[in-house]
Image 1 (cartoon, helix red, strand yellow):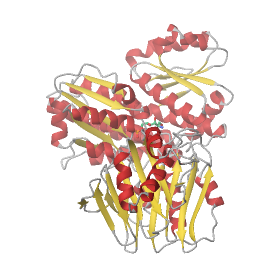
Image 2: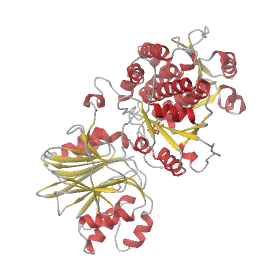
Image 3: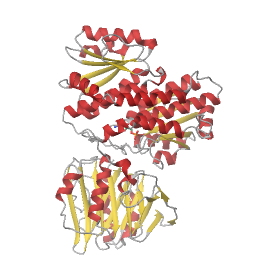
Image 4: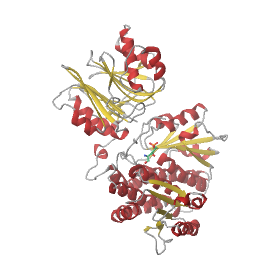
Length: 600
Ligand code: M6R
């Protein structure tokens, strides 16, 4: 979480930093700040809140050729102007922005900063103060930076500015993402390529425990021993229009609407020249040869993993477990002889998932990452990667990445099934094509979804989602979507589980959204709907065509039932969207959250 950006070159740094931060705002929006330099000195602007608040506070007449900026998701210290980055050293000579968590900041304070009066509650300020202490002892800035980095424990992407040398930005990374963007008359650094796309599409990747000295003409990469590292640049195939909202009021709505297109792109990407589904041979072998698959993920990606487990077990007959990453590290089950780990992560940067990846790599196990972001940390550090090809997902609430994850897992399971000589019994390419059309039809029924949201969720303080089998997994996702953007307390339950306690919460008018897409549990879920209705609930049944009953609120187009999660989630995404909208919530940037969760 948090996003950083730095620029040095001929253009107006202030504008490039602000535009870059706008693109990084998904990483945190508790506060924001920039430090820019010109011949008059260094000017720091910070504000609590959004980039728009910062923009309003920045002196628009300032022209500058270098600077650093930050958008914050608070970890140490409340969201406030005081705790906003950039942080300055005691003398004011050094300014620093940081994304990550410095685990040993208390110890560093004790050892190096006894006489320094810290102004903020952040771990970050400690870093800039320690750098200054080293400079006070006679080191030059680069060496002071290096020595400080050697002391840091935890995660960081850092950009440092020395006011006595306004021609250089010092940057470094460990575990937190950071890229350098190259230009002819400038260089730029940022947590994410999207922040730099305004000026360049040529990037250099940085590795953990590297530092970089950036001027307008040169980018020098060194390891922490001070040795020069050479690294080729690459051209990113990102399209600037992919990261714009266009005519949509919110990214979330745009991304929901993109799902049919993403489905088609995935089918295309994972087809060979004969139209057969395929994944790279080593990936298929890795799954086929594993005696057990362990899926590791968080949040929405975890929910996609639950659906994917069904595919891998039912079609490919490989036993599969799904684990929440943040629990797995210290709650590790007894592993099988030949496990394969599958990490699912839209961003590819989630710290909880990465912690498990590091752990299982140390144990010598193979890992495959399913991610939307090529070159992301989880992709680089795993043995294999399958890309989601969903295009940038900007809204904090994940939508198109979820359906893309399920589709890619389906393809992986089908290809593995084939290599293990197991029959699927249907044509997955054809069925995914039907899914694409069904998604399109659903996206065209937004008015209906808006009505459902108005009818069921306008005044309620809570809502329940119930389903069985695959529907239960989608209910978990539907309830997460609703709670994260509308702040309605929402929970997803296995239909049969309600009567074991939670049914006590049902009172007159409680909305209960029930999914009924699975024939083998249809009667049971219908029974659960009757149970809650008898206790006053306001039921909203969403069923699959062929299973519908007279009072169902919405009927989904007919699709292969094993792939139903790909379509049943769309009404839930849209209902959550409209519920949040009706309540006046900030749909794309819900409170307390960030898109990329890079702290454990
Ligand atoms: O980038 P990842 O897929 O690893 O992110 C995992 C979760 O943080 C993410 O899915 C989160 O739950 C979303 N905000 C849900 O909409």
